[in-house]
Length: 176
Image 1 (cartoon, rainbow, N blue to C red):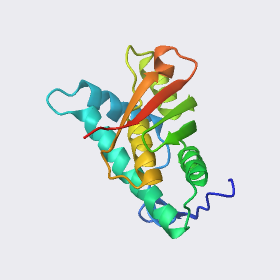
Image 2 (image 1 turned 90 degrees about the horizontal axis):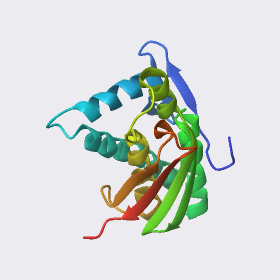
Image 3 (image 1 turned 30 degrees about the horizontal axis):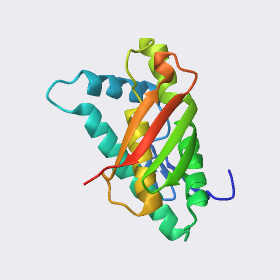
Image 4 (image 1 turned 120 degrees about the horizontal axis):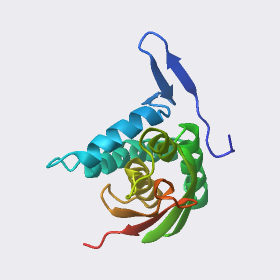
């Protein structure tokens, strides 16, 4: 771990749950993530992918907001480092986040547990599948800049499951 992220991991053997700093946390499971992502994509009249993004944004964004508050982390670069380390620690992948300003940023994932699972289970895709990552990044930017959830749009512009060398995301503050 880097100096910015201090995690206490606890496993409750009776409940079979992991906790990071007393937050119930699901540590990576690309089998599960692949299945529910595929179900969200194929669902009709349900807005499944939007629900994945919004859920990830709120859950992961709240974790970050609380962590920044408890640890008194106010410097944006340190906050970014914490978010990157957290994503890696929960096993979701290697992500680099660039927070240019409160109105725009970007991220690159050279390795993604979701993409790995998708490729192993379903093969390549003709569309991006990193909806959890999109939600995570929206939550990161909300936490970085004190904006309410739903303030940021995240678009995956390149995707490992589509054959790109890395997944790339553009993050922008929504207008209005």
